Length: 205
Image 1 (cartoon, rainbow, N blue to C red):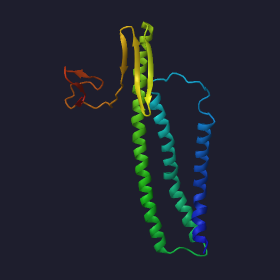
Image 2 (image 1 turned 60 degrees about the vertical axis):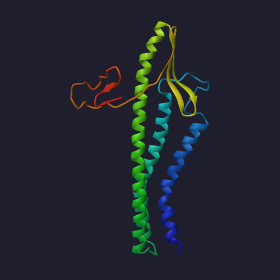
Image 3 (image 1 turned 90 degrees about the horizontal axis):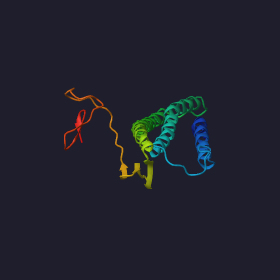
Image 4 (image 1 turned 90 degrees about the vertical axis):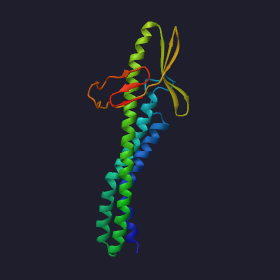
């Protein structure tokens, strides 16, 4: 009577152990300061918030990969272990298990795709803010002070601040992927201002 419970627990043990090891290592990195050797607060680099979001998504994507790759192996180990037991589960039991596993696996795939799309967007934001930061840093040679990723409150920041003799300027960086122009008369990296709107290739803002 214990075999139907014993085999799923045994087959899920490798994935469970791996998940615990990954979570423990991340906890040690965060609490023991293994990721950042410098204790004092430093000025933020361009796109620091975007980088942190991307790192968090990297961890979530890795967790999703572990379950997407490990769930089939867990079910396979469970099946081979249970069918060789003294008390083999019935066919109806396996139909129910496969139905639930299919639904769960589909949910995992949807989550993984969503995480990959979010990570791609934050990666795009990070590259754009770094490019803008490099351009603005040139102003320091002209006596300006340049600050990046200035925090305001939780989940809010100013992308760039330039303190110049003529005033203080706050710069917000927005990023779009290059889309081909429907008329093919505009270059992919060209933006035209008509006095009212910014004409990007394929759309206007």
